[in-house]
Length: 276
Image (cartoon, rainbow, N blue to C red):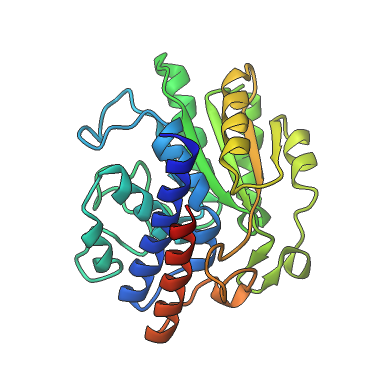
């Protein structure tokens, strides 16, 4: 898949996000939209996964530490072929496989049930450590929110990952600078994020534009070369990316669009798609 195809896929992932949240009348669009390119690159280029064999012991693992942004994860899984796109309309419905936070019991292809912030990276560290113990070559990826890293458990996990030299672990931070109550600085600033991870023994890669596939490709390629320590890729992104009235608006952290807003959002994404 070339860069242009990745861009088109990411735009479709955004449509999937808006569709899922609209039909659920609930969910978290802002941080899902900001991560669309990250999800797309991971599932379409970076990770060794197979929708036909989602439980393969040799697959790469992905843990969505900021589990509330699962509309983005489901959006890309649909494009990758794990399930039909139409199923997105069941998001958060009773009995749906697409729960409001990822459930490994409900949906094949989900490697860890997440939602409580900080716990996802802790599980990912355990999965990466297990690979070392078992002599397995699979890699483990985990996506965190920048507000999430205000949780102390994140840094306990980071300390352990470094102590055990888990070079098969790649953490990604979606740095859109907004969380449910406002900007990071207004709530509880974790900056400088890169220096903190560096102090905890991580190899740090800063991505100036987390929506640029060339920059993402270079970052993930570099991460694969790192030996003896875990890696974190810190991606500068725009919350609500692609939808005019959601961009850089903390109010859309956890709110569903009404019918009029849904139509505007989809029209925004249609225009972007036409330009690609």
